[in-house]
Image 1 (cartoon, rainbow, N blue to C red):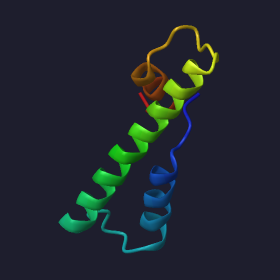
Image 2 (image 1 turned 180 degrees about the vertical axis):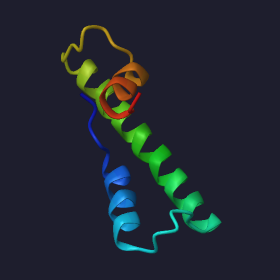
Image 3 (image 1 turned 120 degrees about the vertical axis):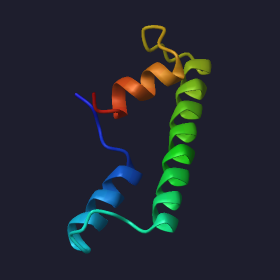
Length: 73
């Protein structure tokens, strides 16, 4: 079961409350893409930190953890 990141939740809420065209302006899409990439890095860094502190996640790499936890197939 995948989870939703905070950035994905925010965009979903903005889309549900805003215009129904579902086609954001280019500048807003760029902000979303940058925020999503920053959040992805933070999640992977936290995973690495936990792994370094002794937490074991079946040997998954940070990108595997992120993909399995947050990305819808």
